[in-house]
Image: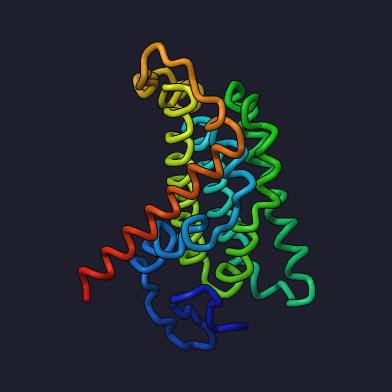
Length: 237
């Protein structure tokens, strides 16, 4: 079994034949997923669903949480079965596991959050083709123990969700003048106070709702991340 991850900075996680596995650097996994090795900010993956659904922050949050569930569960299952999966069939098995989990999430959302499913339902099956999920299965879950794999999936999913919500918020405010519109569909009536009108009597800006607006907003977010990293690096030198 392989003993090292291909992703940058990943700790080794080997436990076999009585050899005590080194402790997992949980803080490093969290920092990688949320910022340093973020699915979008660093790896520039999963851009298709990112641009497709971020017309509002609520849609971004819904797809981000669904993707996080799949990342955690796929990391857990693939790490659990890694000793049984041969290298020759690993990719078909990974896709089969991910497709099964996405189907469960799709059916669950349709059953318990039907109104939101009517908005996002078209995009939920596309999680199967999310290259970030398959990438984590190949580069991390298939080479590590169950708990680190699930934790890595959780952090990568939360990092992806943060970008989806941030991009959705920018596009929604500029495009509609609102924030978290229809949030009660996802979070329940008790959190309906999140639905805000940022710019009253706003007539909207169509470009930001369309895919070109998504590209523009994403470009500014990527530039902002690079600027923050550069200033943080300058302070530490």
